[in-house]
Image (cartoon, rainbow over all chains, first blue to last red; front, top):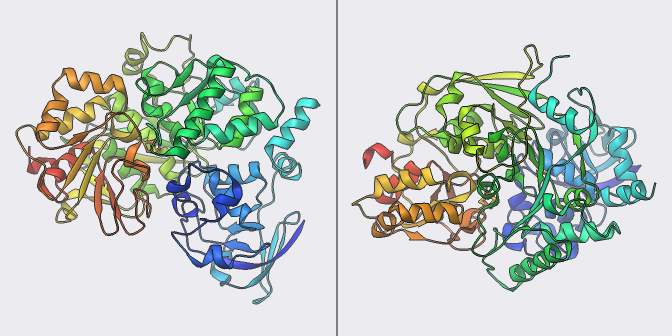
Length: 164
Length: 420
Ligand code: SF4
C-alpha cells in the first residue's frame, strides 16, 4: 500500500492529552473528536488539515493515556499515517486496532519539515521525502498485525475469526 | 529456556509451554475492566461483533470513576449506557455511586485481581496490579470490546527491564519518590513495550501501597506492566480479599533481561516531576521556592490510606496557606471511612482542605479542581503533561503526599521536614 501526502510536523513526546484533551472525552464519535484534534498544541491543525495528510513527529508519539480517542481523532481528521522514530505502546496498539497506519522510522523527524511531500510504502517499509530526496527504511508490520490492518481493524478481524 | 515472570504468565495464559519476548499470541483474560469513559465505546465495539453475551459476566468489571458522580449530561449519558449494559449482561462488578472508587485502588482492595493472572483494562494505569503479581496492562476500547466477546486479547510478549532495589529508604522517601527517580533516570520511553520486574532486598522495605504507586507509574515510562515479587506482605494483603486459587511465578535464574537498573533506596530524597513530563525529576530542595495555587492529594497513585495519614500527620494543628486550595480525595469509599474513623478527615478539614467523594476528579482535568491559565498545582497524581489538569497554560508538579501537604501549608513547594 502506497500513500502520498503532505506532512504536518511536531516534536517529540506528543501526548494523548494534546492529541485529544480529556475535556472532550465524554464524546466518542470520530467526527466530533476530529474537531478538537491537536488543538492544545496547534490551533491551525483542525482548520488546515486535508484528507491524505501525514503527521511526522519526534520520539514517543502518543505517550500518556490509553484513550483510543487519540488515534480515532487523528484518523477522522483525514490523516493517512503517522510517522515517527518511536510510538508509545498503547497508542501503537490502538492505532493498529482502529486501522490507522503508524510507521516507525528512525531519523525521519530530522529530515522532514512542515509541508514536505512524502511517499510512504507500507508493504515495503519505506518513506521518501520528495523535497530532500532522502529515502528512509521504516518498520514493517509482523503478519499478525498486517492481518488486523488489512481486515480494517480488530473488530472486523475478530468477526471473521468468530465466523471462521 | 529460563523465563521471566511476564513470559511465564503469558505462556500459561496462551496455552504454551514457553514463550519468548517478541512472540505474538492470543492469551486468555482473567479480568477485563473499563470505566465510564471507555466502557461506552467498548460496548459499541462489542455490539458490532454480533455476539450476544460477554464471555464471563463475573470477570467483567465496570467502574464509573472518571467523570462521575456525573459532571455533566454527557457524562451521565455515558454512565447510563454502561449501567444498562451491566444490567443486561448480568455484570455484578459494576461500581457506581456509593460503592465506587478509583478503579486502580478499588480492584485490588475488593480482591478482584491477584497473582499470576492476566488482567486488561481500558485505562493506561491498569499496570497498577503488577504490585500483587498480576500481568495487567492498559489497552484501548476496541481491545476491550473484543475481549468481552472472546475472553482473549492479543499480546506481544514483552522484553523485560530488571529493576534491582537495594537498601532502605530515608525518612520522607515513599514509593512515589522511588518511581519518579526511576522514570527520571530511564526517561519517558525508558520502558517502552517492556515489562519492568522488581528484584532485590529493597522490595521488602516497600509497603503494598508504595508498590501500587510504583507499579501504577510504569506506564509513565511506557512500560507494559511493573511486576513485583509476591512476598509475605502481598499474601497478607490478599488474605481475605482475593478468593481464587493463585500461582506465584518467580523469574528463573538466567532469565533474559534487556537491561538492569539498580536503585539504592538509601540514597534517594523527596523529589518532584516538574512540567511537562513525568521524567523531569528534581529534588524538592532545588525547586522549593516555587509558589503554588493548588495542592491535590488523591488519584490512583496516592489516594491510599497511608497517603492520607502522611498528609494529616503534617497538617495536624496547621493551616493550609491562604493562597492555596488544598483538595483531598480518598481513592475508595473504604479508605474514606477508615480515614473518618481514624480522625484523619477531621484533621484535614480543620486545616482547611476540601475533602470529596472518591473519583478521579481533577487528576485529568475532568472536574472538581480544574486549573485556570497560569495556575500551578502540586499533585500526587501521575501525569503533568500540558493541560493535564486544565488550561494548557497551567502547570502540574508531581509529588508525594508528604510534599503536597507540606507545600499546601507553605504556599510553595516544600520538603515535609519544613513543617514536620
Ligand atoms: S486517578 Fe487519574 S490516572 Fe488514575 S485512573 Fe483516574 S484519571 Fe487515570
